[in-house]
Length: 100
Image (tube, rainbow, N blue to C red):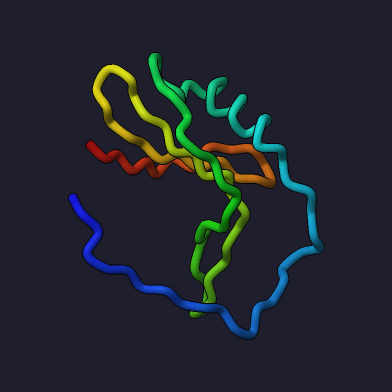
């Protein structure tokens, strides 16, 4: 249950696959989490950050997309969950990590 270390890396030879595109707002991402029923009752949003998430790997290359990353806490159980929204399309990225 405790972090004992981490690995940090960097990217070189970055290739942009499409022209820069506007991302959805943080507010819109939160609304979509609610509309998709991904915010359980009695939860509190602890923080939200815009970052990048690995989408797929092709020919030894990794494709990243911008995502809104939310940390939510259930007031009844104290469980913490992390949810991600695709910042281009607004779709929920289903992988959820829960921490007690």
